[in-house]
Amino acid sequence: MIKAVFFDIDGTLVSFDTHKICDSSKEAIKLLKEKGIKVFIATGRIKMHINNLDDLKFDGYITANGFDCYVDDKSIYRHSIDKDEVYSLIDYLKHKEQFPCSIMMNNGIFINYITKEVEEVSKAINLPIPAVENYYDFLEENINNILQINLFVDENKEKELMNKIFKNCESSRWHPAFTDVNTKGGGKHIGVDKIIEYFGIDLSETMAFGDGGNDITMIEHVNIGIAMGNANESVKKIADYITDDIGNDGIYNALKHFNVL
Image (cartoon, rainbow, N blue to C red; front, side, top):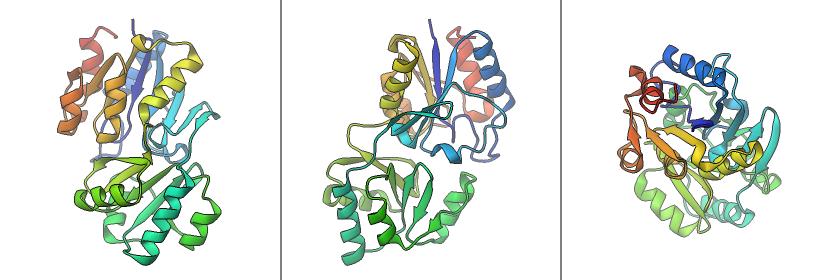
């Protein structure tokens, strides 16, 4: 019996085209709650940037790809990137090569400089363009509070940087323009474990929906992992089930398929 359902936001609950959650997904979440099934968000966004779910209420939030988890406004788990990895990044950017690089903290996203690509990504996910700070000083002042780093590089450069700089981190890409960097061994699946431990729910009673590379660990981890029809091929390969895409009632249809609704 399913007692907890986890939802990614961008590309899963919310369309990249409309920036809105579709009516069938709203109805599905309402019906889940009426049945006493807990509903949770599992996103790469930080909590303060969850701005596209209308008035829907969730029982908990896995944010920053599993590294910052909440029940209501209460933090139940937080894990920052090791400071040595951040110092390696500072050294590389100062002395070898520049590229747009944003850092995520629980109170905002900050970036070294803005390009057209950065502007396009912010527009695509309907978020404000990150603030530009006195970047290196800012990094050092907040060295112990960085939840995630976003590298605006292609896949080849990503591999190089992960080998040279982020030896204790791993990357996941859900958008072609950038990759998320988090502490190795973490991910949304860790957030799932923290949430279900808090509520006393067994892993066998869980289901999750996702579409991007940062959803893979979660979809593999839960009892029933569902890829949206519009998901990346890497997500579809590991999912237990592939539903319809976000614009064709994918969430509602999958919940009906598994008799959760």
